[in-house]
Length: 489
Image 1 (tube, helix red, strand yellow):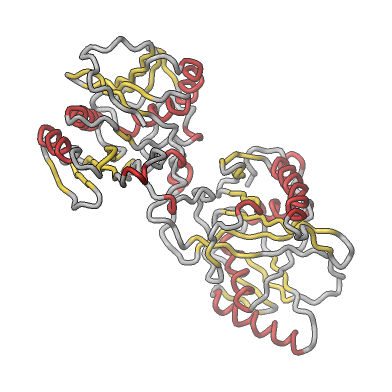
Image 2 (cartoon, helix red, strand yellow; image 1 turned 135 degrees about the horizontal axis):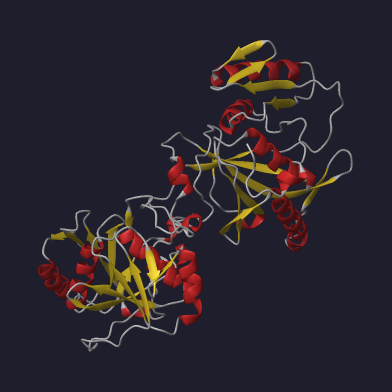
């Protein structure tokens, strides 16, 4: 936590690094245009120097704070923010990651009595200040001078600690800088500025993009809000989903598949773009390490199939967008089958809700693994792969999915209603069971079918109680596709 010196000189020493942000969203380092990637690379070895950020008064706060977060990622602890008509305000900077969203309480915090942050929220228009001295009622102040006096008064209370500054991303920098000056004048010695990192996919742009959201850029969150396994995706809806409580994260591999064919693997909770081949190698290595881990727990890591082959019990959670291609999902499933891993789960939504737009999904803040309120309706849905090959004359309850909007075929019957399909599957399962047959099921769909449509059919099987479903003809993608950075349509 940064402590601002009470006797700071009126004219501080000139900064050795100067970063400027224009109203159009262009960034320069010592007058040289840079991207966020270039800014981080150029300043990483210069963190002992003083850095000053000068922004056009009409620059938006989101652009300025993206630059501040980049400095935090480079290793800086503080930065000076230049303001009109006043000396620069020195503030702490962070890298914009979720683990920095929590207060740095001293070790003897519980002995000294609880202290709560004084939250100052700047309105969208920049003309009002909402004071939230938790747990006291919210106050509204409209004048910066009144704000200075009121904060000074509140800071005399023994249970008020840090001052947390929260502003909307589209707010003009002139209003945020005015707020910082007012807080400095109040005598606040510990300022927390909520920062969000620019999404890695946008860090090579010469002009910073528009904010992906106009939500408050907040500093304070509760640990129960952390859901680091989430990633932007419009997950399919399945009524038989169970809530994903994230209680087995160390025993599973989490892969995200976007509607545009990106494979994003969570490695140590960090999202990393991978190819199918890299994903397959990661699966093999994780399954190999899973064996000794389970042995140490006196549990078995493998299951032996009827043909004598051994299959890993490692779980894989595939969070595929509902608009992802069924072919892309099948290629991922083929990697699992090749690695002898059968415990597949699909990420789902338990209830339908508003979908993200493509722009929102592609440009989500990098630090928004934290959600408030927590998304408690995110689910998962088991889809165990077949561990043996069936004879050619095996009888299946076979459902075919085709068309857009999707239609479902069972035998000679055709419907677009998933509830009708459930009734047909239920009747077919009952007839096979009464004839003493094992109930085996298959789903077939053309490669371009929406993944969400296939999940509708899977959900009908699950409603009947059928959990193991065969997907005939799973084959590894061609080698060129396995090494492609984005799966082709």
